[in-house]
Length: 502
Length: 124
Image (cartoon, rainbow over the protein chains, first blue to last red):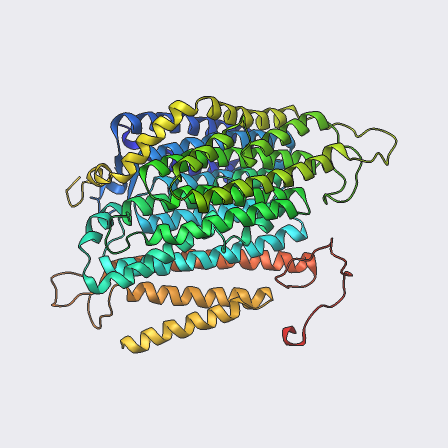
């Protein structure tokens, strides 16, 4: 039993961030030490929570010790623990890269904002209350606004305005949906909703369906599902590379929330919504895949290419989510793990290139970059992973998805395979432009930047990707158990002890 | 009263959406503010409309639902903070770019810098 440790992933970053802003202002070394220490501790806590959730099943933390439908609860289950481990692992690599590359010194409060972002994302993964999910979304968004415009610059600030405006509209939609749900059911606790919705009166079904669709739209904005993906290329393409790598887990918050609501609150056997969610998400996911692949092929700069590759991988993840069966959900979870790590590696490789190359545009010729061998290897590996080529985990993930959709092979297989091929072409074009076709317009070779820590962090993420590939057997077995527990909501609901004191 | 509140929410939303689709940052911010007003009223209405009722059970026959009031308060505070952030970013973007158009410039496209690309209906 983890007891108070369940709230630690939310409280620890919040305290560390506050202390950083108040007491460590202007002392970058101290901020770095505190940030790394906090994230290492977060990793340890997340691992312990993962172990506890696997061994004991769902566990609830009552905030203020108020009983469940009245107070706010945090719920630890296998899915939220897995997402926490993914988040903290990625955060460790990102913070080390930021320190190694010097990104954190280019503007104020990088580490404090990163900690607030971790607090918001961890809270979104843990909370068992729909309105609290909105609040944590806002926490992570407001931190992400700060990180997005970190280090400043005119285009970046104005791309940030678009990002903020888009997400404010999403937040308003979220509130409309939550108010509808509350008006219909009188509760916002997710377990309580799962209990009450099957007995919904006939007259309220239409309102609930509207609310469900609005919620899915909100999560689709977060997950960059077509046609709500327009914010992503501009945001990720203009954000600092290290921040874009951290944002790789933010699109997964949308995927997580879709899975949570689609399995617990609006499960496929709920008469009011039925397969409404799946039928909406499936075509959107297929179009997302295609749009992402075409964008990869047509991108004019490397950061935009990485952003479109990220959109495409979200399409693949949502494709597996949309089927809403335990088997496909296990596949979706594997693909979410893979896609987060692969997108982050790609953005780090992109950042390594961007800071060395004199020209951002791919068409322009530029002198050869320093450290081209190492960076080229990293770019190749991330491209292989994103496009889904063997031997990395993208191949296994896409294979599992193709296998899971045997019955709909005529529609889904061509889309997945052709989009993978288009992405491969896009990556090959960009890679050969960057690494094979440089024109030496200057006599002396480019001066290498000394940043061993940044390379270590990027390659550590790649190592995690390799580990995910090698351990695919045990990982998918564990994920199958997780997916099965998602569709058997009783454990989650029972943990909330609805209506009982303490 | 239901018709009045419902049409008020509808009008506020319509105004918000219209302003949000403008091509300058300031109307967009105003639009988002209108939309958040509509949301706050909508949340308030989700607890049913009551007149002259205290949010306490047992004192009278009817009572007001206190939870939407708490949710609305949270939403107001958050939207207030978000609008402030957006405002600061808009001012920063305006100062750095010299204009407050929402669209990003594409320095890579062959568009001479400083050339006014405004349409007459877009003039401030």
